[in-house]
Amino acid sequence: MIATALALAVASLAGCSGGPSSEEIAAWRHFADYRQSQNEANPVAGPRSVKEYVLGAAPPYHTRYTGADSILTGKFTGATTVVDPDTGTEEVMATFSIHKPVMGQLTGEVVIDIGDAPPGVDVDQAVRGAGDAVVFLVNADGTWTLADGLYAICPTNDEGRLSMPLVDPAARSDYLASVTDVADISALLIAGAHDPGGILDGGVNDQQQKAIDKATDLVN
Image (cartoon, rainbow, N blue to C red; front, side, top):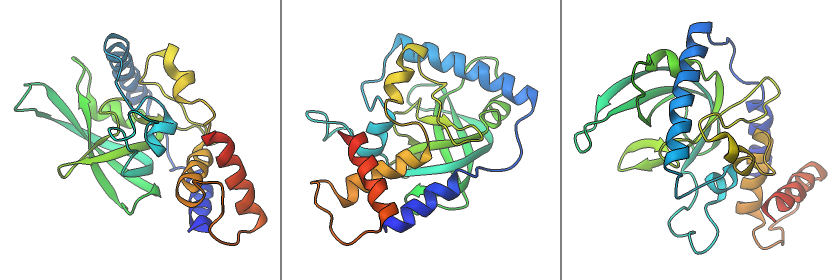
């Protein structure tokens, strides 16, 4: 299983081919500005970092934020809006084409509720404008949502480095502390699942040991 996680990490760095258009990028920036203002006005209670998306929160919040149910690399291919019957807001239901699952068994495509729609933006263009990305998901009564409801989308560049454009700029370094790319996410998963107490549960090769050593540094 360790070897599988490492293979997925390497494969996911390749990303998906084809980039967004200038119109899609502009729509994504509009969406990101709107979402940043939400984050600044109403900071999320948790999880509040990529590390918490992957491993869950530290005590005393560990029972409330237990980590993502699925972590995927890929890209959004479109979106529609639906009205939430409870709040009356328009929720964006975005289709995500999966390149590789970093955690979980989802393949193909998945529809994700990514929160409310900003006024005046074409959400179908906006989600395409994110380009290649990692999404951290939880399953809420059969609906896939972002791990924190609004912000857990990390676009990646050609080198696989993560960014957090939907959160307030002042919070981005905290969200990405010690986590820079998809390989770091897999390292965290290895540490959390295979060596939580610092004692390995079987023989590993040098490459696997290096990944676990890196993961231990990230967790600590």
